[in-house]
Length: 177
Image 1: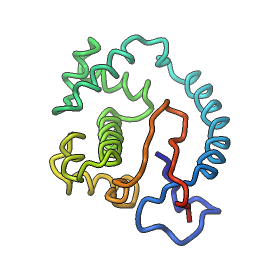
Image 2: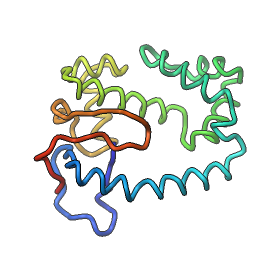
Image 3: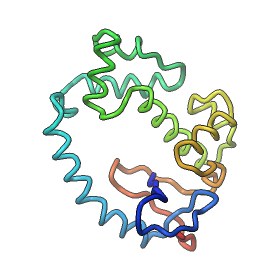
Image 4: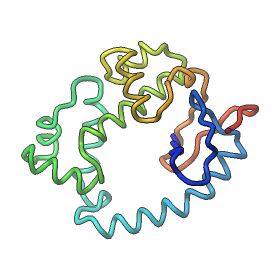
């Protein structure tokens, strides 16, 4: 997912009222510009953090645990126990490794899951429940608060997740403002 903040200088002032997919050419151009930035970001942040993700086996085990736990209620206490830390130490460790608070990360994972399920043809209600939201209104509120647009148009999007840096292919004929 790519979110372009309308407050950034140089973006057009007319804002879309819904999510707008990129064409394959636009996606390729964007990926070409983002890859060097992502590589620089990985280098700079990994040097700043005392616990680099790749070197900490707790990170991989936490991601596995989270993948299973997203089907239900995700509690900090349970996540901390999964990696052998106290809750308070876990919150500090997690923020240092991930760069954001645990609850925000879980919300991000739920949004990703909701988008994938929605793009697979599920209804908003189905996507909300499969992603761990209480109902479609909860998913929509969270999505709008995060991205400023409603999630419903994503039902027709084609999303392919090959890896974390590749931009998914987008159907031709749909453009960006």
